[in-house]
Image 1 (cartoon, rainbow, N blue to C red):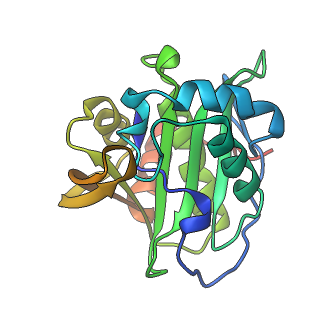
Image 2 (cartoon, rainbow, N blue to C red):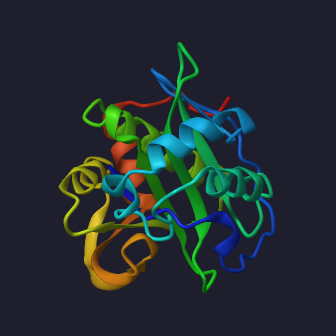
Length: 209
């Protein structure tokens, strides 16, 4: 399960060079910076075509050197990037990754994520996405968040729809793992919709630690 998650060193320029990326907490998850200790788990879970072919710039096969590069570049937090390891709150087990970054034109913030296949269907992506959305709108002066998924990824479509994202259109996007452009759906969540959703749900607790 994934939405397009570009590698952090490929991001475009943003109006702010570095954003604070606080640890995020949900009922079952801790979202924090990727660590060197995550490299083995990242390598195992990302080296899966069911994951890599759904993410725009993840290579396949995915080796340990790819994971090492990912962890190293994630730590820079440049160009508006906030890259998180999604971990299990009780055990600390690595489950996947999510990120916020500026688009290449610097005019939008884009959300991406992937979850390791053994952990699909457990609501992990939805919890992580909700935490990222809350952090983004509370800490950044942005009007909306974009996300893109492959048209062949109904699970990620449901995650975005449950989170308030609205379909905007379709486009062809290069996917590194398949070495070709594929059809992707573009979704957007605006601040007004997000505020209405959290007001209706009665959500008051900040997920920022």
